[in-house]
Length: 363
Image (cartoon, rainbow, N blue to C red; front, side, top):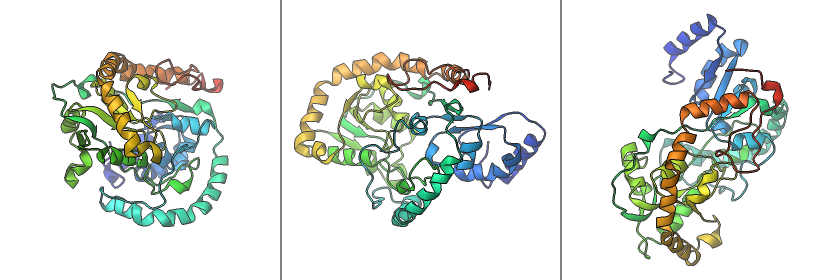
C-alpha cells in the first residue's frame, strides 16, 4: 500500500520486490502521480496489468503497456470499441463554476478551464497519434465492476423525512489523460447533469415537496461521513442519481437500490439493466427541468413510490450476489478465458466478448 507519490520508502520496497521476482503485478487504486512514480520501475520490466476506475485520467503509457486493463466502468471499453462517445448528450458549460464546492482544487480547475479549452485543439491533434500507438485489442479490455458487500448497505429503521434528496457531489472535475477522450473536457464539471437536476428539484422545495441537499451542509461535511450518508439515503423517498455526463456506473446506483430507495435521474446506456425497475427517468434538458414540467413528473414518481421501493428491495439479494467479489473474480477470469460477461451486468445488445487470442492467458 502506497501513501502517495512521495512515499519513497514503500516505493523503494516495491522496487526491490520487483527486481527479485518476475511475478505479474496488478496496479489498483493508484492516482496518476503515484503511477508516474512507479514508471521507472515498470518501464523495463513491464509484466503488469492496471485496474482503471476513472479510466480517462490514467497516464497513457500504463493504459497502452498493461497486459490487461480492468475497467470498473464499461463505457471505457465501449469507447475503445467505437460504440459510444465520451459524452453523448448535454455538454458541460464552457465556464467552470465551483460553487458551492469551493476549495483549492475546484478553484484551480475554474481558473484553468478556459486555458484548457484554448490548448485542446493542439492536444487533440497530438492525441490522434497517441491513439495510433495503442491498437485497439478487445482481448485486453476486461469489465470488472465495483464489488458490493451487505455490511456496507444495511437497511436501517429510518423515517422517510424527505420526498427527494441529493447525497452525492454535483461537481466532478478531472484532467483528461486518455487520448481516446477529447481534452475539451479537462477542468469541466462532468457532474453537470446531476447539478442542474438537483438545482431544479431544489427550486420546488416547499412547492409542495420536502428536499434535502448535502451541498447545504458546512463545507467540511458536504462529503457526508459514510454512516450519515447511509442514514440520509434511507430518509428520502427518492434519491437523485446520475452517472455524470460520461454515463459512468458509479456505485451510488447500487447503494441506493440495495437499501430500498428508488431514484430519479438518468439511466446508463450499457450497464445496470435492473435499474429500469428502480429509477424514474428524467430528461436533463431545459424544457424538462422547467418547474411546470418537472413538478408533475416528481408527483408521478411519488405516486409510484411504494411499488418502486418494493422492486428495489426485491433486487437486493440478487444484486448482492451479482456484485459479490468472488462472483466478479470468476467473471473476470471468464473474460480472460474468452467467455462473454454473464447476464445481469450489461444491457441487451451490449458486446462484451474478448477476442480469442487472449483466451489462454491466466491471472
